[in-house]
Length: 332
Image (cartoon, rainbow, N blue to C red; front, side):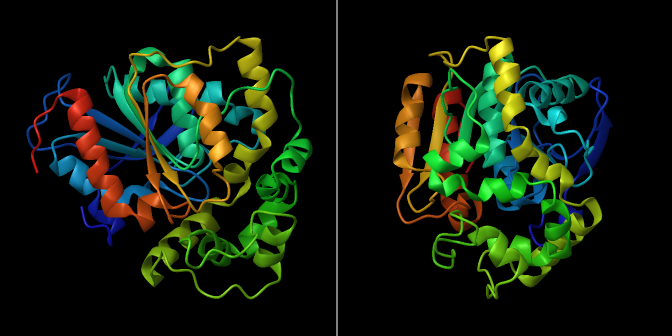
């Protein structure tokens, strides 16, 4: 498992009972005991791939855990429906549960970043009995509004969500595909090189389509090439459908009267990046009543991409926290 070589990981592709096909990396530890060894299910965000977890997969597997890192719906080698309704939280949760069924895995520790954090929280709500613990980075669990809030109204309430208007627009995929490498390089940045006000007004589109943005600092040339090749091949329609599906999340969850509060018995760890404009303290505070067994790790000065910018810390703290919660013997 060499983070610099994507081919060094164990890749699998499986057809699910939901009708979708998922690509994922599946790393099994040496002393694996089915039904006993903890299994981590890693979920990435936008615009990422399973490869976003490259620095964590090896250490967590060597620690004695089975690690499954998926290409989320719309990405990489996974199915890419054109219809945004197919990306609803309930359908994503069913996909993940179906994947666990294929692998004969009962329960997992679900770990997510960005949209993967959103999917992890929702998996806990939709498929509570399949989760042993949850670890999320950058995106807190938000309470469901009693009324549907259209994205333009949401962007007015939270100006740092304005970038979503561009990503959800019908004409965003071809613009992103024409500038695939630039898009990846623009977004994969630490707090040191993050472009000021990128998430506000129309700065995101202007930066991708028109502006000279300089070089980011979180991906080297080979990593940037790997991402670029994947998005040139797979396109951006699927990845941006996660933004178009916001309305369908609300409709589906409201129709099902989905319980928002997580069980008090479910351990939860949230990594909060202090310099991420899309993760304000107010949102973190709103999460607390919904997650009674929550521990928050404040990461001062860190940007959105904690799994890269604070890679060693995320790897180590997750091991320490899970060892205590799952009562496993440390193998470091």
